[in-house]
Image (cartoon, rainbow, N blue to C red; front, top):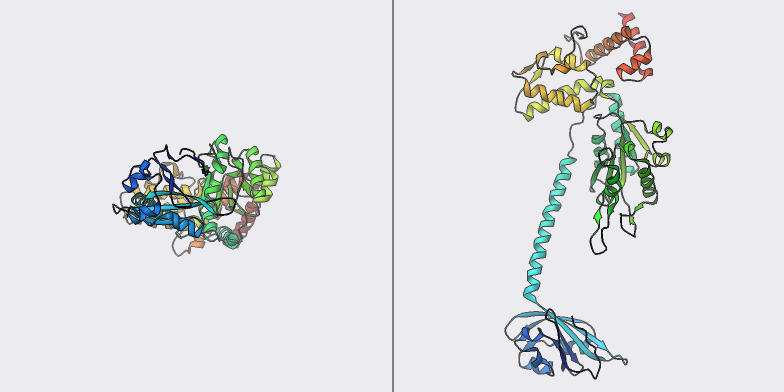
Amino acid sequence: MAQFHLTPDSVQEVLETHDEDVIVTNHEGIIVKATRISGQRYGIEAEDLIGKSVYELERKGIFSPAITPLVLKEKKKVVRIQETKSGSKILITGMPFFNYNGDVDYVISYSYDVSELLVIQDYMKEIEYEMSKAHEEVQYLRRQMFTKKELVMRSKSTQEAFATAHRVASLDVSVVLSGEKGTGKTTLAKEIHKDSKRSNGPFIELDCATIPESLLLKELVGEQTAQSQPAVLGLLGIAEGGTLFLKNIDRMALHLQTKLYKMVKEERYQPIGSDSYRSMNVRFVSSTETDLQDAVSQRTFLSELYYMLNIVPIRLIPLRERIEDVSVLISHFLQSFSVKYKVDKMVTDQVFAQLLQLEWKGNIQELRHVIERMVVHSEGEIIDVHDLPHEYRLPEDEFLEFNFEGETLPGILEQVEMQVINRAKKRYRTTTEMAKILGISQPSVVRKLKKYTQTESDL
């Protein structure tokens, strides 16, 4: 807008602007300045407004009410709806300009067509409606993500892991979940969030193993590209008030671990390209497929970050060490996929026995995959050995027969474990070798050997 000076001896003029409706009156209500479009609202040329009294224009019905008398009376900014002779409505704002004695010398007023404001208002209502819909969608997806599913936990180790998670969920401390891929770390992380005080906040997941090192920091803290542009939020900003789940944190580069440690310690972060810091209100749950303590010893993981994040360590045991869970999961997935594909399937004792003996290096995800394949590919209602994928069929000399008649499930599982342990004992010379092949610890092998040696001597 063109500049002008409110001085007592200024020359009356029409301001050279076409996009704002501005009128200046003196303390007597005489219009001394106006913009080119000012008269358009009242059906008068802007030049014809100069020198006119707002009192006179009000008496003639050009507009009502006049804003200048109200500002002179109240000596402060006044906002009113003004009606013109044509019946249109204008939102007009009057501002006082004071002299050194504290008296109002001039009143500057600017106006907007109410119809334009109503269009903006309608637009804003549409935006609010769309935002409301988006908010509801986010809430719905969040509820879907955390809808309580049936958790299969027959083994003592799994029950203890979930019990620990539920116990510390409300304490807002950092948790590290360790275990092989597919052991249920993500499921447990969601359970911790769902039972925490942050359950109404976001649950954001970042896999440190899949994001390139050059992009990981930007993904975390966001970026300020230009002062005139809004900042691009990072995951720390998106997760504000909620939980940030850092999967495979052991795969994060060492120099980025140092930056993360500083952010967690100071509870603030600095977006890339920004001069200012932002406070951080996020709970960290991390996961690793390796032993973080070994990584610290090998100096591939920052010890300071380890001690800060590993307040509550929870280890999830591989499925091959949880044979009780394998048996329950077989039935669980069989029923689940039967419902999904609208079929009624069951497995033979021989298939069930073979599934119990497999190593399941991919853990729960692998078992789920195999059960789904069998449900989909088998032709009849009964799934037999021929329906097992070829890579999951045990050779005849390795297949162990079991007596299912009159046996309880714990008894059947004990048969499986005993025969697997005895088979390994015949093949390998040391308990260390057995532990490596079976994928369990050496003390576990010793304990099981002692147990089943005693069992056989009692027979």
